[in-house]
Length: 331
Image 1 (tube, rainbow, N blue to C red):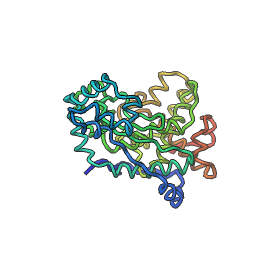
Image 2 (image 1 turned 180 degrees about the horizontal axis):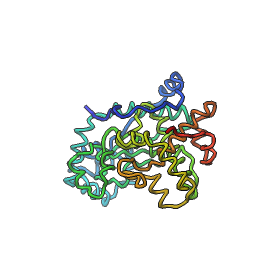
Image 3 (image 1 turned 90 degrees about the vertical axis):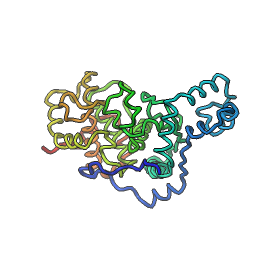
Image 4 (image 1 turned 120 degrees about the vertical axis):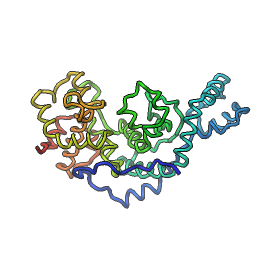
């Protein structure tokens, strides 16, 4: 059986901020959806080796995204043959087939999520979803464009999978996310860029933290049963640190005039991914300012129950969001 079911073992949300969607409306939306995951890796590896070219032609209609619309060239056939014959790719394929024998649970989870996406964004399109073997191409990870979602299953085999040891350039805090429970959050982290309006120019730290906070809130909206430690992907103890030190972090940002700083180094260290936030030591999670931005967005929702969540996601004035949130973390 497939071991992809989300593990709801992490922290519960400190205080529920989001209103509960109309369940009957969401259910009606879901009836109209048909979510199917197309497994390119299975189709590819099941082609008989002595008829690869003709086998690829038969797959073109269903997997044109990978194989193109034109006849498969001999050069492409040879490239795919090399991929299939690579011993490490073979190991990855075997591990993926063992770990993900069936994706029905994941399809159901996607159906739930896309139903909520349509609830909040009625014109939202449901992408075509493909899985594939990337050859541990961790630099691309989840890819979402042209209404197509690409999931490299070989990068979700569990943080201790043996071949991950051959990725010395990948930090350990990133490798811990190479587990099945991160598939759905990782996908909607990418999808969030389409639905969260951002400033085009380099702004202040506040701009960055509210923008990242809106992306986290979007994930919370679409994945309401997913724990914070998968949406904000750090261990439980680092989430606890953030909760306990929220007021201290906020005070530090204000007292050191960082909130309206445009210093690129400071913004990067405070608002973007890292094993920890260097300003606050090893026990802190990375991008702590993004986590605070999420709390600002949650405070905005609580203070403005009459407003639409989508209005918040599309608002680009970070100062306006902060002011309207009346954010004031408790010591």
